[in-house]
Length: 131
Image 1 (spheres, rainbow, N blue to C red):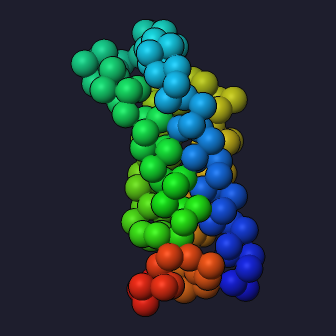
Image 2 (cartoon, rainbow, N blue to C red):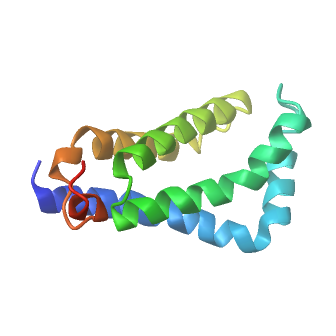
């Protein structure tokens, strides 16, 4: 994979994740309440959901920020991939099949960012001599 192509992939998924977090953080309570409403009939209890719904926007923001900077890129890709698997599981539990393709695409981009990290350029990881 060419280095510039990798930069576009890394920045694309980074901007998406940063944006997800950025728009949700200012309306955190409303976001959490909306998620809880969506999951009210699911198998997941509120004591698990509430902390997750409050943490999710901050995790999304952090993943996006790290990917945009190209710092801790592989770790950000792993955390992003795990997050997508969790979201895919939750989406499946509430049968929200419309959200699944977007989550699967995000997962694919995290896999690409991780797998082709040797092409990582225009990144803080490179200035530190690590991949």
